[in-house]
Length: 391
Ligand SMILES: Cc1cc2nc3c(=O)[nH]c(=O)nc-3n(C[C@H](O)[C@H](O)[C@H](O)COP(=O)(O)OP(=O)(O)OC[C@H]3O[C@@H](n4cnc5c(N)ncnc54)[C@H](O)[C@@H]3O)c2cc1C
View 1 (tube, rainbow, N blue to C red):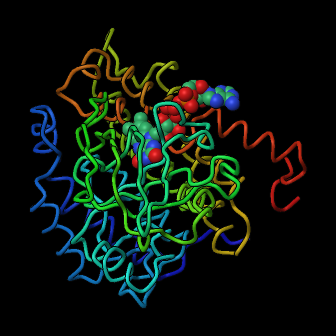
View 2 (cartoon, rainbow, N blue to C red):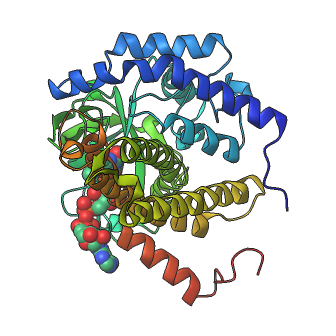
């Protein structure tokens, strides 16, 4: 069993590491200043410049197919990149990306939605959650009824990431109430100028995370804007959610590495009762437990990614990585705050920012409880084994 990186993997990882150190980390205090003034971490133009800089170095479209100009990197490589990006809280991701389900677009939709999204000219958002349907996504109530050559959409979506400034939404609506999620939900590409409205929702996390509620009041959508087939939308929604669950804990893992490094540094310089706090067993144990959890998470994430690259059904492994990543990252940031004492709780340091941001990992894209439900169901139904993939 070989756990080492190939030369190419190491080169790419190191390139991202250098990019993060040289281009992103120097922006951290500016990001904190802006966020504390209620602004987004970076102005749009600066974000675009950073993406262009990466693109000039050939870094663009990490997992986008080569035919669309992307790098088409493996899932393992994508995870390694996310870990590096996670080492800073500067809200950055490489350009050249479109929602995985947009690749189901027909030729006309490809020109109007897929290609401009990859180019960064248009922004999408994914809208399934409703006030009455989150974990229980099959319970959505937004409807779309056919009138001539158009669909008329009525309903409300909530907590939609990117909903504030998206140019179009991937909207999931019930087209056949009797069939529900099993053949009665359809996905629509709905431009903002077709008439939906959005309202930002205040959250405890940073401004870049701020989601929106979307209101559809008789919004008319041409029939050519159905993504995929009528009635096949729920499967598309599941495909979107399953696109890269392992990448969420991968980014959190990078943050945890950085946080524990900060805690190590602080514990060696902060003295109480005549000795550095790093000399105390209670502090050492917090560092040791965090290191064990970080190491465990690394292999859960990479193993899930490896399963994808091997063509296996990785959903079980991804749920395990997401659940473990969410709970452990929150435990680790809590310990790191504890090690920093009062300073950890202030806005002098970014620890409290990480603390607020990491909390989301236990809620979105499947809560802890929903991951546990999935994992136990897989085991009880015999779809997965406690012996893992080697068992
Ligand atoms: C910042 C943010 C961004 C988001 N972005 C998007 C987005 O872009 N697009 C989108 O469509 N949605 C998005 N969401 C919605 C998110 O996916 C849902 O909030 C999440 O799935 C939980 O749904 P809910 O909030 O309705 O909670 P509920 O489903 O009401 O759950 C409430 C509690 O009950 C628990 N629970 C529910 N069912 C069970 C069960 N069967 N067994 C045990 N416990 C259970 C849950 O785990 C949770 O603890 C976002 C949410 C947030 C906060």
